[in-house]
Image (tube, rainbow, N blue to C red; front, side, top):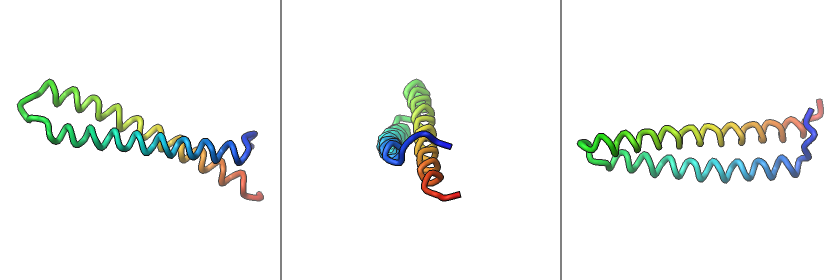
Length: 80
């Protein structure tokens, strides 16, 4: 059982949603940059690919935080 109030959970959910939006935008920008990079520039491609992998990890982490907060909020509103 959670000790966090519904208002705290809603705040965490809103924060996670903003983080997810920012992480998704960053990932999409890196994906576009990777697509636009010159194919012969292996150093730039490797750096962009590493950045993209980190951005994808941030999206996954933000999604997990959002889902966790949403599940906790939903679970607290059910009468079991």
